[in-house]
Length: 424
Ligand code: ADP
Image (cartoon, rainbow, N blue to C red; front, top):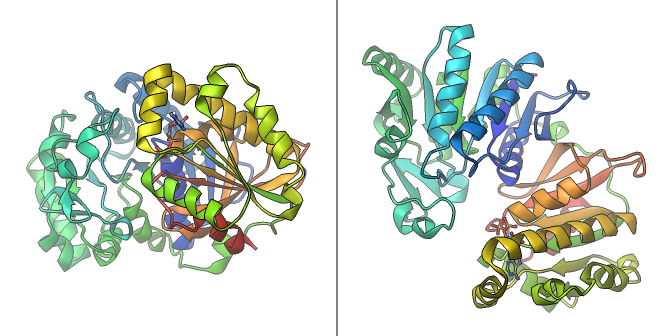
């Protein structure tokens, strides 16, 4: 293994893996820290954790366990992946996890410096003079200031990350990045001489990320969103190729399970229904009232699946979600629907579904767990940040399962149809 990655959530892990595959690496994503050594050939492994909103000490403990496993597999460089909107709780966890990984690696490598940049220009996340932009606006005006779990109210990443770090935080600005590897390495040396341990890096285009890549060769730890990954495989002599994304041929029936209520997913559900394809709405209040909606949904799907993809969704618009949350409680409603959709995903696979689209980060996490999936190989991209994957599951499914984990706001309106066309 060349690159060992630790991601703080499941869909983010897939997003990172997708960028590595596009740059030529063969990538496996593991759900949680594996119990055993890696059993397939891969240039990179992404260990997907769910540590973004955990208490900092728990996030550190899990991240260090992932580090130890990756080191045992021979990882030459470690990549800590977080969200491109730098999602943080009041305690971190980007700073505390970064420093815990640095402490662990400093003992072995003698190096005590890393970078931090959530830049992902393909998805309109750019960093300029240390400030994070989402599209045309600063992070704190992007809607992220109202996020229920990780409200982001400061777009100045140097100032913000400093509140989470013991080490001094500095900046490698766009003028340095524009000059390429030598200038970046000189700036790193200068910052280290000043006692800086972590440097935020400006990047406003993929060209910036590709110029940054060579300067990161040999750095024991890189911390970033998924964007920086496009510049790393070349450091290991790897070039883009079609074979990196090769997956087994797709077989079996097709279905979409959607629990995301984001704007993009709402549009995708509408587009699927409008195209005349079959869709079943899971009503949260019926589930709460004890109706066996799982059984109803599966009985509905069984005769339809042979004709093409079906959609089963709890996706709803903001006013409906508010009403449901008001009656059931925010967390209770979320957990209840995640359990229901996970049971439906499990039932669909039992009915012969082997191509499964899962929409929503938490929803996808719950479904993947219900399906007992521990590892996936990453294949071709459907839309930026969303690839098809192939998972080996229990012996009951000898040829495994194709699935894609779509984060709420990713994907074009026709994603639920396009995904299957792409795979075919
Ligand atoms: P996203 O990636 O868009 O954030 P997630 O799956 O991570 O999607 O989060 C959506 C959350 O909303 C989940 O906890 C899900 O169970 C919950 N949810 C889904 N449908 C509804 C609904 N109709 N009412 C209330 N909550 C819902």
